[in-house]
Image (cartoon, rainbow, N blue to C red; front, side, top):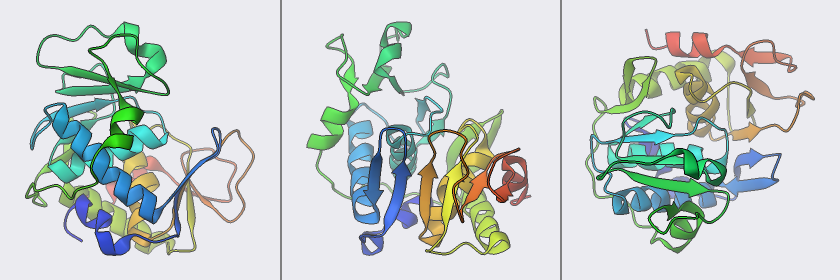
Length: 238
């Protein structure tokens, strides 16, 4: 696989579990996850996001930020997991809507409920109603997909690192990878999102500190017996 969009190929859609978020009790099969990623990308296009543009996302491990990252990557757009960054579109929880007064040309979207302002996009509503069409953009391995810590990570960088995580930890479709570190760390994106998707496994976001049996956790000082340090995951592509 050369670009992140390859992970969302139609022939990878199945009833296998792709994402489980324990707190709100939300799950996505690979069919749901892939189809929703197309919709997320199309909502971003509606907000004016094009290839090379930046999308600033709250670094919270919930379906909306994760799917926004994957949807943006399919457009050739760049995700920054920092909602204060200069970007064409910004995605945050609806509780933070009043914190943002964006200048003309920048768009705000919120999730977890409808916005107060008519100029703010209601993420869930738009994604739900959007057409799940495959994006027409041509994305190359050298295109930037993630910006973090002042560094630009290309599709090739991220997938090479994710493949090395899969190989080093022997991840496959039966494995669950638990996210216990912030999405603001590029290593969390590599090991917590891309590696399990590449292996056909499950991304899991726990609710609390109880260990998840037979899972691999991404983070430092985690309760699981097996863990991947975000720092090590990023160094995998060096």
